[in-house]
Image (cartoon, rainbow, N blue to C red; front, side):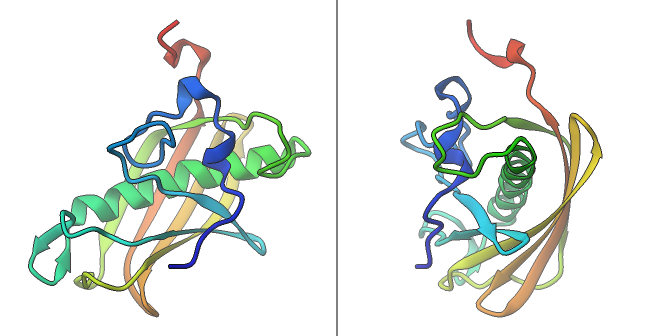
Length: 159
């Protein structure tokens, strides 16, 4: 499986690192990892046998989760870069939460190939970013999506 070496999720503050989809501290989670690939963002993921809808095909909820977490991770990458930092710089990154999520399923997603989510990021407000996402299985475009993320308020922590 292709990996993202320096993922933005590695730099999330511990209080914001528990998401089932992308939280590094959630032992049961999917651990999606998002990084830069040129000017686009990328997340690679190998669905487990638990992620099937019917034998041979990936469950659509996993695809939605991948689009969601890739979108918020991409927004965090973009704002982190705008602030002068890159993943692995030692600086805590901003954390986004989802304001809206739209997923379009174009083709059945086969179980087996590594999934690749590719994102393009657009700032629409200092605290609100839009990310368009394409999800591929091998080189086949299986789903598209759009995520609007907002900077997570500090009140989202348990403290």
